[in-house]
Length: 248
Ligand code: HPA
Image (cartoon, rainbow, N blue to C red):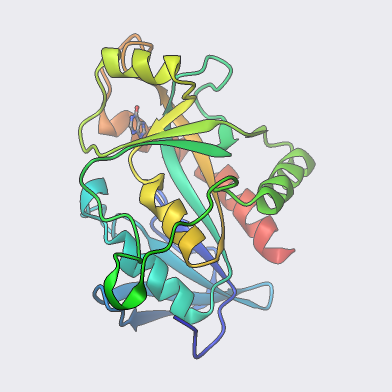
C-alpha cells in the first residue's frame, strides 16, 4: 500500500463537512485502489500537503452503510498519509455531552452488521488480528484537546462511540441498551473506518460533534435536518480546530 507521492495528513469530512475550503491550490485526484476508485482533493495548508475526502460524497449521496471504507483508507495510505483527522456527527447518550460539544472518542462499541470490516480476508493477504487497545491515537487526541483549550473551544477527550449501521436512527430501547453497555455517543460511520486505519498502521482520531440527544433522551423526534443545522452552526469551530492542528 506504499505511496508514490507524499501527503502526510488527511481530513475525512463527515456530515456537514463537505468542502476543503480551508485548503489552498486544491486539485481533484482520482486514486485507484483494489476496492474501486476514490475521488478526493489535495491542497496545501501552512506549507503542508493535505488530502480531503468527503465521506458521504460532496453532495451527501452515499449512505453510511454504503460508504466504501476500504477504498477510502487504502487511497489515503497510497498517497502516503500517516495521520487522519475525521469529523463525525453524533447523538449523545451522556448528559455531560451536550448539543454542540466536541468529543474525541477513545473507545468504540461496534453494532454494525453489514459491513466489510478488514483488508485481511485470508487468501493472499493472509489473516491478521490487529490490536485495538487504543483505536483512536492518544497523541492526536491530546493535541486536539490542547488546541481546543487554547482557542477556547470546549473539547472532551474520551468517550465511547457506539457505531450502528443506520441509515435509520435508533429506537429508545436500543439507546437504553447502549447506555447500559457504557456508550456515550452514537453514530453511523466510525467503524470500520477507525479499524481499517489501524490495520493500515495510520494514526486516526475523530472529532465528534453532538448534534442531538439520542432517541428517547431527546424530547423530540430526530431529523436529518436538525443534525445538519447543528453541524452548520458549529462548522466555524470545526474549521478552527482542524486548521490549527494542520498548521502545527
Ligand atoms: N444516531 C446515529 N447517528 C447520528 C445521530 C444519532 O442520534 N446523530 C447524528 N448522527
